Image (cartoon, rainbow, N blue to C red):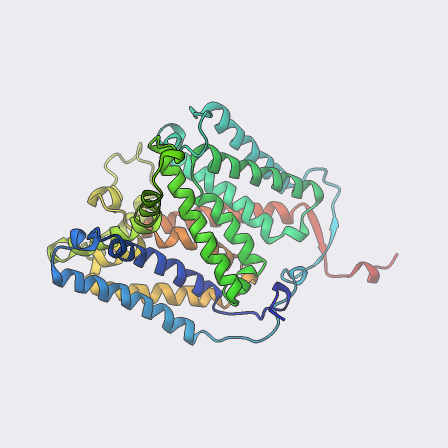
Length: 405
């Protein structure tokens, strides 16, 4: 009889495996797709043979680093705690407050969502239309902070799901559904919603099943293909190509060579080519952008642009390490992998382990300044949301059966 979600052992490597699998997809789908279709993508991105050699050494070394930490992260064979035991449950005696602080925040999140839906110029005649994101509030810092606020509310609600009252559960469900519909159907995006789904799945221990069984691996593979397929459909809609008129071979070609994974993979190749001229190395100067990132541009008009805009290359964390230090950037990838391995040991019981799982896609394809910016606001909003949750009740360490009349 096969393993089920209930009897899967607790693994201290799940988070590491998540990052390793996503990293492999981001690193290698570009060269694999180029090879399958003979487009010469790698050769076009890196004309010199030496540069291509360095490129493949860099990719291979990243994979080896992840394998090393996965093999050296200890594995515990203890049964995974049941869902109801994943939170250290303390018996709650509710106060006389009519409305909880978390309810107020959730209602505020719902109100902001519908405010954007009603006030922004969105073309509702065509679903999954990513052109809606090219103007208005969607290109401002306010929009990004709004997203982190919604995600933080969702994260805290999921983490303390069994502690929530019925009204809080209802507001959480409305907020999540509204945000998903807003982003996926009207903006043709999915990255922000995916983070919430990943947080939930990691918190509940589902990834232990997905990465611990053959069927689970098939589910992951199917989910990745579905995500790529969504991107292909979105591209057809964006370029006004009717699916009925699309050639099957062209659709497959677009799926393999024009998706978010290959975009980042191509960016790494172009970054390697750019950095083969050692005079182009940034030598850590991009790390200073972490501090500039928090300053609005209307206050600091000469604020440095992100690397993506400076170089006109899709920059990921792996690209940024290389453009700063060339192959010596592997040292920072070792540090990055080590930090993930440390948080991985806390598994679903650690709030920020769950946060790191939620952003496992985003942090791989983001610049370091973006990662720091994200963690800062999520930490702030999460602290506020947790505080509002705790203030709406009085915690008692006594079981109800032990309370004297």
